[in-house]
Structure formats: structure tokens, C-alpha cells
Length: 218
Length: 218
Image (cartoon, rainbow over all chains, first blue to last red; front, side):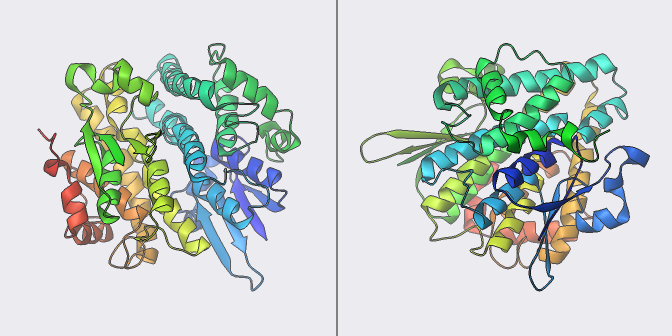
């Protein structure tokens, strides 16, 4: 049995929701409100489960009732891939597999960490920057990351980011695009990213994982 | 034949150097000076190899002379692990393997991206913050990340971060600690991190990978 602690607007939880849907896995979705009362992720009970006080956290409960607790969305995606390889999100061959990981990590390590909630909170709080400066920060890292990704997609993309099958790259891209739209980033310079987003968002697995379709959406 | 484009002070390249040494793999090390003349990583030739204009980049040349080019240090580490599994840096069983990935990514996705060169340059340049504010930013993300990691090490660490064998977690931790020392972060609150650092830095593979032992060190 799988439980996923997440939040409707968390990009990292969104990645995992897409994977669960694509792999046709049932999971209990639990909501950790990242803003209310300073953020439920900082409460003692959740901190015991996930000392980084971040979502998502996956809990995999075996038949004996033992709980395996796992944090970090990219580690969760790899774990789901290894446990449930039937519907694969990584190519089988080593070189394409490595390439998919590199593209996915170019979002997960270069764009997302700079634009997530705790960083924007630090900029506004500790650094006291204006909304305009915060927005420029956000846009800067999206454009830097998406410019490089767009070049790589020219080489690797088909219907999706890496050929004609959905891979981990798409699972990272779609939440990042959702977020970019939220922060009103103009993406017209990135035709491959826009085309792939449209293709992904026609699939049920992606539609059901959308923030606005979550039970805890406000 | 392997070629690695890196830079002596790049934490991400440092991770890969340790892996190459542990796995006893020969690689041509090539230097991309990240600072000189605005940064050699932004030159056209390097940008063709790595559109993200970051180090490291691994080039794996097969017997027919075909070049496989791979970016993103965590993808490179996974690729080396799959090509050369004899000296393993990930546990064989799925759950410990996932746990190791989660711990490694808690450094690679939560600490390092916030404190790397391009971010510190943006803070000083576009945001015009003082050296003191930049330093406080650096210290903040190290302490936040290391506090969480230290709690997880209490549970998982042995001689190294995950039991008594070197894993990907150690490969991420040691460069991050090196960097933290450089920015004068007091690490006395993290006894496990300090102990593991001492254990790792007694091994030849780690010593040879140290920034100061690179041919391009200044």
C-alpha cells in the first residue's frame, strides 16, 4: 500500500502524482498545507517522517505492515520505476537512460530549487526584496533553464521530451511549466516545450495530477 | 575512453572525480575555468557540448570513436554506476538504494543549487547584496540542509553516510563540506557529518579528487 504526502501546488509532489497515474498505482494522497499557519511541513509529526520538512514523502507499507519512508521526488520516481517497471518511464538502454536522467535533473537541480516556496520566502523575508525583484529572480532561472532545455529538446524530442514515449523528463517539465504560467513567464521562445506540454496535458495521467484537480486545491 | 570537463573548485565535478577514483577508471581531465574572462563555460564550443554551460560534462568515447556526451553530475554518477558496477556506490536492494539516492539528492537538490557560483553571482550582481548578506544566504542553506541530513545520519550512518561502505551520499557530502569550510561555516553542530568527512578524507580516492590536488588549482 502506498501513501503520498503532498500538496496540490507542490511541483515535486505533482511529478510523483503523474508517475503514480501513469503506472496505474493506487495511493492514498495526504495533504500537507505548505502555507497555512507557517506551513504544516514544519510540524513535529511531519518532521519525524521527513526531517527536511518538504513534500513529497512516499510511504510504502508492506504486507507485514512495515513502513518504508522515502523523501526527495527524484528518488521516489526512481524507486517507483524499479518496483513497477511494467510501464517504464526510463529507457532500457544505458545511454538513453542516462540522457533522460540528465534532462530531468536539469529541471530538478537547476530550475526548481531556485524557485520553490522556501527560497521565494527567504528573498521576500530575510532579503526584503520587492515583488518585482522576486518575480525577476523567478523569470531569470526559468529562462536560463528553459533556453538550455529547448536546445536539447531540438535534438531529443519527439511527441514528448525524449522521443515518443513519456519519460521522467516530461514528469519534471509539466509541473515546471505549470509554475512558470503561474508566475506569468512568457514561454513563446520555447516551441518544443509548449508543444510537449500540450501533448502531455491531453493524457489522463497528467490531467488527473494537475494541481487544480487535487482534493486539497483551494 | 572517458573525458571529464570540470573545474578544480566545482563541487559537482568533485563528486564525479571521486567516483572515477573509487571505480579505478582512467579519464582525461579537462579544465573549464569558471571565472576567467567571464567563465569559459559560456564559450560557444563548450556550450555546444553542454547547453546548460555548466560543469561537469562526461564524454564517453567508444571503440568506433563515437562520442556520448552527458551532463548533470547525478546522471553521470548513475551512468558510471551502471557501466562499471564492480565497485558499487549504490546498495543492491531497492529500499536501501532508494534511501541512498534520497540522501544524496537532499544535498544535490536542496543545498548545492542555492549556493553555486551562478546564484552567488546573481545575488551580488542583479540584487546588489553586500558580502555579508551573501554569506548569510550561503550559511542559511548549509545549516538548513545539514541539520536535516545530520538527523538522517543518526539513523543511517556507520563509518560512512549509509552504513560502512562509501555510497553516492558521501560523494555529494564531501564536496559540500569542502565548500562550507571555504565559506567559513561552523559545522560543530554536525558531529556525524564531521566524523564521516574525516573517514572519507583518509581514502586515496577522496584525497586525489580534492580541489587543491587538481592540475588546474590556483
